[in-house]
Image 1 (tube, rainbow, N blue to C red):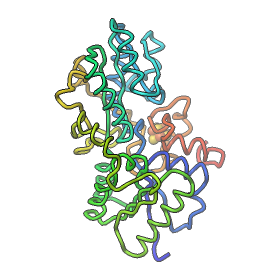
Image 2: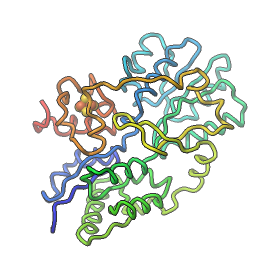
Image 3: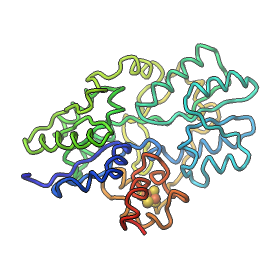
Image 4: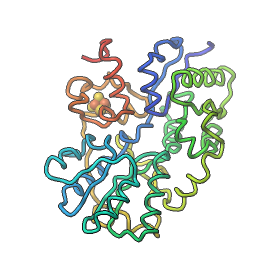
Length: 343
Ligand code: SF4
């Protein structure tokens, strides 16, 4: 190898595979892997958690969420604490469960916590569209949808950027395709390989990326071709575009990223829970001790956080990356704790 290379795997599921199978330690020492912002639970802003907790505490509301959001800390509480305090908080596996719950409980208001990247946005858009068609007036969605390419662009174009190539998230690209990444690769002069999540996917993705780096190329290549097409899934993109519009969005630990979020378009605005319940202007401070923003941008690794494994554990998390199944801190705690990476 002609040079030491720094590579970022963007997606938290990729991080977990790399650590679980020890792939990062099998690679030549010239290759350094750093972890990216692709954990939707980790980057959901504190404001959204506080809005969720406020709504979950209301007696007239059934608050519906995916299970991995229940323990994400807000400013003072998480959704589990709201449930323990008497809130009607229910866990679902699909946004269509929330639509069903709303039609079965017309006397209650049902709020669905719609978070995630381009992977969950189409199903959430479909649920809103269905509720619109059915004329449901007791379903609301608290949205915090983020888009991955603007975050990759932010990292790649930062003056302090150390990352020389990106493993792009295969599941997001299954929906969106990878044309947007082609623009980033060209303008930021970084190679990008759309990569899957199995150990062999990641090993092949790293090989393709290092080959580009060694040859001085900066293109988009598709390792995950068994799932990803250049234009993605047209139907999924169409329903997203019908229901949502692109806006600037705050990312937990990172801050505002231009054009990186989705909000409901005006014809669907009546479903917007933050608007319907007057919570749009809720502002909060993030916990000072958590360095998740640096972890999510590949600047620090979890064991470099002073709270890692001591004040912050999966049982008592201080930040979302220690809670989420895709969080980098949870991955290090699960797979590296035995090896002395944390106390
Ligand atoms: S170890 Fe905990 S406090 Fe430190 S960055 Fe990770 S989530 Fe935040």
